[in-house]
Image 1 (cartoon, rainbow, N blue to C red):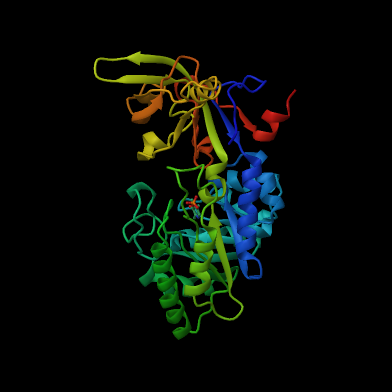
Image 2: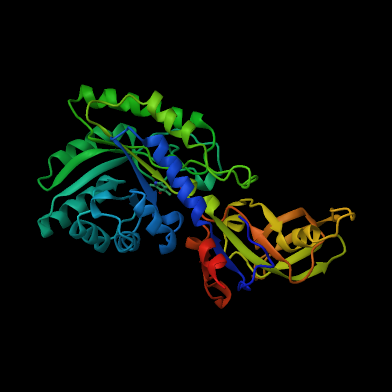
Length: 400
Ligand SMILES: *Cc1c(COP(=O)(O)O)cnc(C)c1O
């Protein structure tokens, strides 16, 4: 992203800046990989980023929406996603959320327990509206990622155990106002190793054989999301490897005649498009360490505090100082080591430890990269801080 600290407008910090041109290129890359596969349906996982400035572009690209709450269904409808292209997952769907989803006519419920199925059926009966239902099956395939963002292993709250799959489907088929439509899976997030998705394909192939033996047919197979992004080198890898991702499913999954294949991508669509801009408030010299204390904190971006996530951090002002040096001068600045920390009253409010940065001063503008997914959507008002303003690159650069 070409954000210059010397750009004519002064950005209020902390703020999120979204690179809409990169989002457009990312969506084009997805289109290129799914072209010619009319049975492929990509849903955008709203929880990654619900900013209307981004949702409009995603709607225009023809994607559906993956929602995990009634609020997300409302946001998706407002943004223009057709109800028929909305899928609704979540282990704790409240009655009002189920009612809303039925009344709005969403495409599919991804049901996570038979207890939930019963409530959906009872509400559908009260409303006299048919409920289209897929079951989220826990495929027990491990994802080599942080424990808190792994969802596909045997022992967790998500989904229905494989051994209970047939019983759940039979139960649904006996319900007059429920239509069993298919199977749903989601194995985790920030997955970069295609072998995780290969393992998922192998598992789905096994489950399809079981379905066939029982005389059952799943119209829809939903493989969830989880494709990761390069947090270390966002400039070199702004667009995830969608070819490797979609090829895995094209080659490894044995779909039956007429089956529709759904994907629910969140992070991989918006992650690299967002940058959190922040200014250095103080450079504090401790006895052992130097701290760059910035005006953004875990209230704007909680991923580092919540799951030890790392984001590339750049000091844009120091880069600009270097670039403005006269020819003849050596264009390098001595690097120093800083802990980059926020202002929040929590010791976990740390963006980076012992980070090598050019010499950093009060007032410097810093870019915290790859913050487009699970950044703004997880922002909070802790410490009575206001939510951060957001800009698109167009908005920033079109101003006089
Ligand atoms: C969060 C979530 C996704 C999106 O995950 P990403 O890692 O952002 O791609 C997809 N499906 C379900 C059910 C989810 O909960």
